[in-house]
Image (tube, rainbow, N blue to C red; front, side, top):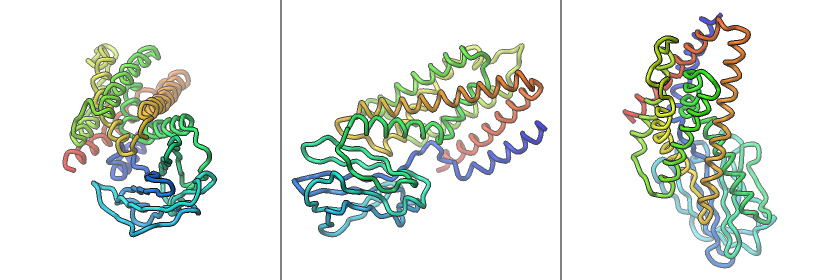
Length: 329
């Protein structure tokens, strides 16, 4: 039974690799509507050039607004930027804004509304809710909820960070040791996330992403080679290993957050709640993994080692693909 589970997991990892080679990237669509003078608004619409939205998506503007002049499009990196000037009669409160084509995609869209003399409003559009009504803004709740959800989604859908945390759980024995090690990882990636986002630190993204993949390969190898009577470096000093690699993962988180952008004037709140979301997702992964391992130890202890080995091989194979892909990209 375990042999077939291992084969299935490794096959899944190999099949997942091509579609997940850049698992750390978080690229939602982005709409910004800024009031430049009373009734005059500038709209910025950003989407990945490789996505369905970038190729055929269209912003649904408020009903009391009209487009003035020609729309301008430009390519920036892998994104398409569209600029529009709007003339809007009256307030935007109670008006709808949305994104055509979002319902057919697998991504979300962030919307930021910045009126003159009023707090900025942050909204989140999803494939299930591609249109939203602009209510009276509550900047704290809007920004906090939006960026917390984004943080949770990033750790759960950013497979490289998820696999790193999972590999730590597979390697270590004891809930307290896992808690200390994950805390070291958290502190480290928080340092570089904050430092990079605020412009104090900087590293080129491609080598960082490659080394992040390499860090997962390292842990996967440690899991496979672990022996009860011969504790390896990562088992003797796991918090040091987690801290050092966590610094690199923080640059990865910062790169993803840079793709999203931060609301002007509310950078600390958005940064704090994004990191909070990451930690919520991370704790959920740790809790689930520990529960599954506990279940195996209690009911099928003979499955424990083969299951951990199969998971480690799958994580290592996929991470090796990421490492090679990121090195040659």
